[in-house]
Length: 247
Image (tube, rainbow, N blue to C red; front, side):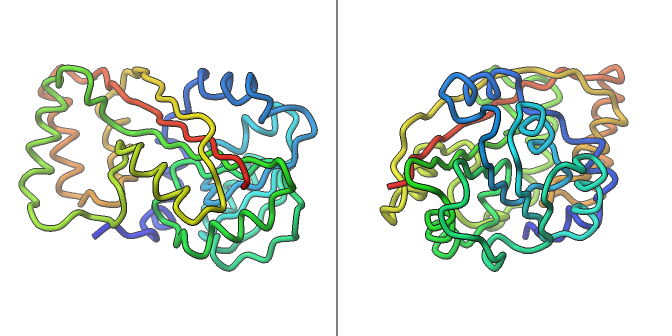
């Protein structure tokens, strides 16, 4: 079963291994007027600041909520301008109508949405938005590469139940339904960005170490697959984006 504390245990590796979000995503948030100078952002599950840093560079003020103390420490070092709160999204105290934009970047699948959605709704000012996205490691629209075939073989040997509850990471339609079912939000924009990145054996080892549903033995096997394939692989990823308006 996936463990939300996994990232806290591997905070240093997480900080260096996770790839950035694609430029096209930031352009879309800017084009739609959501990310701009002076915008007040609430970021939930901020990790080490992978999304926080670009939002600060765009001129936003960011309140970043992160439950892991080691992750939050690295977040403060990377983004000293952010107001970092060490707490879970479900329990962090938030002022009413204090934010223009709420963000969950590769984090919403960890939340108890029955608690978090009304909390975000209260924290957003009228006219506010909630943006949800994640980097999904593997593009199903692309013919599987030899490396992706090896990864699929490793994962298939687990069998059993899914490693976490809720929709799959690429089941965007199901996520839209889940995020709008309570009536607190309405979807206004849904888009998916495709991109590629070349990764060496050591980078794959670090990256897969940060995956909460991968064991150390499986990570080693994935890294050996990269060695077998010449020492580097091109990964095809997607980043689904869901923008919701406060109802």
